[in-house]
Length: 222
Image (tube, rainbow, N blue to C red):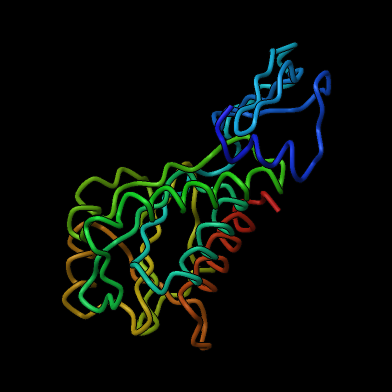
């Protein structure tokens, strides 16, 4: 078992040899395991049985979000994971303020993955979202394969609540300051429909939570 969950078991939960623990693989399955040895930074376990195995439930949601400041972006990942998104793609956009040094990109991605794992542990979700590499908006939209595609855009006349969704949806969320007109035009060329979340101006991380929650409600999952 990796160092981080090992530390959590030994230092936070105070587990001992012989203790039974529940593990998950991030792909829908959870397991009961017995701790067989405790080392300084390593816990070894023996699988006892498969506790549960389930398909991912509900509409498939892929999130493309412009990079924003570290704390709000981490908040987005945490809440999007709790709300069951399938993938999260960090995006460079025209108004992106955050620029990561190349030598920090991998460590930042590992931190985002850790946040997603902790979110799954907290809410009992056995499916981890895929955290994709940082890419440009253009690169992302050219790879999106979803039945429904929307971009959050305050100037749109179309309300999110006026739409109907099924099967899958991709959501594009811009930075503070939103997408530029050129970016919205680019998104529309790839069949993204601009929608608004009402008259209130929402922070990017709040918009993520609001949009995902609204879509799941509209699909009668809540």
